[in-house]
Image (cartoon, rainbow, N blue to C red):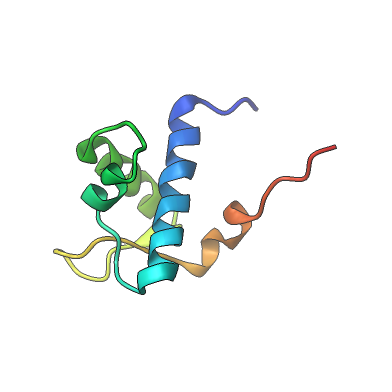
Length: 83
C-alpha cells in the first residue's frame, strides 16, 4: 500500500506531538505544531489530530487541552528498517 501525502503529514504531526510532549510533559496544541514549520495551517493539523485520535494514537485530556500520545503509538514511532 502506498502512503499518501495526507498519511505522511499525519505521521509528521504525530512525531511533533510525541517530541513536544516528551520535552514538556504538557498537552500539545495545533498552533504549537504549526509554528514548528510543517507548512500547513493549524486547522489542517486539528483535522489530522482528529484522525489520529480516532485511531487511538493520541487523546485529549480535556476539552481545552492539546493532545497527548498514547502507548499505542510506539509501533508507529519506530523507524522502518531499510533493506
